[in-house]
Length: 455
Image (cartoon, rainbow, N blue to C red; front, top):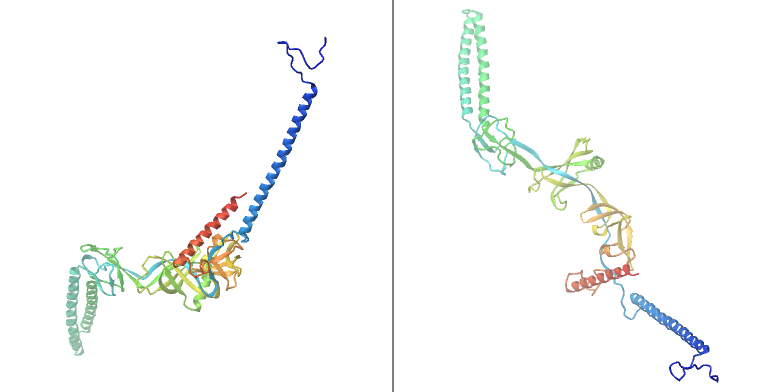
């Protein structure tokens, strides 16, 4: 007989039967699973977006809070610190117009002491580096041969003088006899010629005796000028002669003393015109150009321009009473050729240089820095002339300009911090102020680095 339950099948292992799934039940299971998957996807999309929106709002809120804190409107009250700067007033003053050059110190006189006769050096009377006076004995050459020459010349002179005296007496007698017509006129004429001859011999003997006496004086070597004697060039016992190139010593005149320097031919007219109006002051400075050694005045120009260099040699003279200038020393010469009346000057530290040329930062009434392009003129000491760009009376920033830009907010070093008006490091308050400024600079630098590296 047939099985009334078509979903049941007979078991092959036993007498019991297992239920059989219908196609409808399997279809229902698939539908349920699909619905669950769709519900999960929808839930993930909804909750994930809500979480992202909340996180984005939190980030925007944090950024807004940071911006408000920088502007000073946040609850934290923090703001970006301004740079601390030093300032100076722009001045109007008379500025000397100068020409600078490198020069060489030259003595007004350099005399080499040489022996004017040949002989052996017997004595030296000077010390090296000693100041000597004109005519002072410096050395002694053996005078023995010269003394004998003097004696010989004097003996010859005495002999010829005696012969001349006898010849004159004979001529006088002959003239008396000729008047009495006792002798021939020829004998009188011959005696007169002999007198003339002997007079010439005596004259020559006097010159020879004078020459010998002069040579005897040359055995003592004397200073030709007053000045400083240099190192000894010959020793006792050396044979010296007028042909010696080095001589015995060199004497230089150091007061006054000259400095020779070269001027470019473009500046010759300016110097000549200024020298016609009066004396041009000159200053000799050391090699660094910072320390003044002597004060003097312009002396003269050479008369020929050097065609190879296009320069003209010039001289300035200095009294040099203290001996600050030394012969053959290299110095810097600053020659004043005029004065700029009421020129605008600022400290050298206020001038900065950029791609567009020179500029300065001026302090504005709202405590901000303004960049002003300027044209720089002459530099005098620690001041520089501003030919164009400033009118005078402005306040320029001299310190701390490396940390600011055009329009940057700045804080004055004299009035920042505790308001004591002290520069950093002047006292305890100044030290605290210096530390605060350093902290502000570090915070500012950190903020700049963060702004640079932030996406």
